[in-house]
Length: 471
Image (cartoon, rainbow, N blue to C red; front, side, top):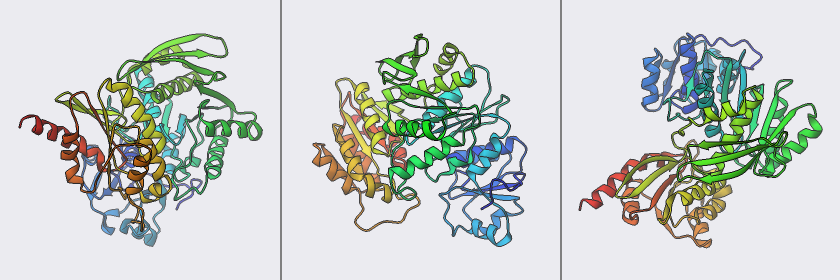
């Protein structure tokens, strides 16, 4: 793979897996900047349609012939080494560029902000993108999901700020040298690449050392991993400006009050430096989202934006697809979709659902993601799911992995049962919607959870509820 130090021609890039959330965003920005973009994906999608409308050449299916006269081939860590387009690139000596290197190139010359953490990257990046855009600053951004407001995961802006997610899963966040970096939390995940929490902490410490001279690190005052990172940096990077955010009494920006407003929150923030307080509304629910919003507020302050003005911009944020997204309501039953696939995320979204449901019940429909993650964290997933009134556990979504003997979603289901949960297992995807609809009653909230195709179930469940009501 080409080194970031090597001059790689991005004039005619070919993207393997161009329909992915991250890849399609980079392809869009490059196309708008005048590159001759081409690529391929396993199946057609609305993202591919949007890229075609920008003039990109997009193929459905992977084939050696697709690469054509590309100046380089852009890949992510999810692409298998035997992919035919990757194979032909190696045979022909076409430079192979990791998506993080391509993104780093796009960020050159901008005031860059990189959002990192085990959870919450997409939401916080999106909050910043919306907030800055609302203030007329027209930032560029690259996000791992579509904004509800713009219907886009990326934008080439005329302003001098570039906001991007920084993915720790494969250590590719080491490619960036941001002016402002955010570390939301540090936990063990991505077990194919990290053997211990110590490995993860080392990776985040390297990321922090990549911050440009004079830059700022914003991190959580409530997360033990982030605080361990802060303590390490006090010794290894004493010149780095660190701003802490959270409910902790010693946070530089402290959340002193979070008032639930159903599917929104009212947040009071106090600055430790001058004692000034700021009250603003976050139009998405949950304590974790309130914290994410104050993280975004802290980034705005580090960029020189007056906090009250930044808070006004953040008030325009309406959410991201798949991040506690309301899919619809039928017969008094709400269906919400969530990307949560790590125990911490599951627990946070179930707590948010509990706060939003009132007297009704929370029915969680959970699809474990990856065999490796389920092997390492399946018991913790089940413990978190036990907080639902009813948990429906689906089979594991394999994604890029091959099955592992003895690793099934029963690990999750049994752990939920052992922790007092009411659990039903469903091994047929097509049976889930009807099964869930039969369990629900008016006032309930159904929460589909996972990083796989469980996201497609929302409309199916709503249809099944409607059909039951019309019988």
